[in-house]
Image (cartoon, rainbow, N blue to C red; front, side):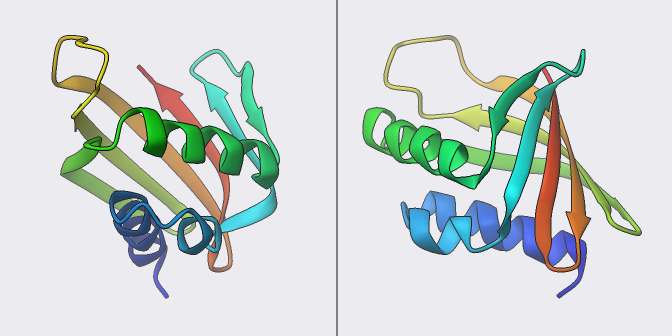
Length: 112
């Protein structure tokens, strides 16, 4: 799969609330960081736990990707997130930078 296809497949699985299928696109040692490099999630089990909770708490969460750039092992997505259950203003906007290793997401940097 091309890196852009891996990222889209992970997002599609998330939208389907299929945490097992979603995590199949993540490396076991995946790291999620913020824009300053602080680690937000370390390892696939931490990501799985966070995603499963988010799917439960925000069942209508949806990621729209109006812009995507793919280059080598990197995918950069502009995201517009809607469907939060806690009443926060929508859409929430962010930029995510995915780094892949083969067909797995190895690192995500979130610029929000």
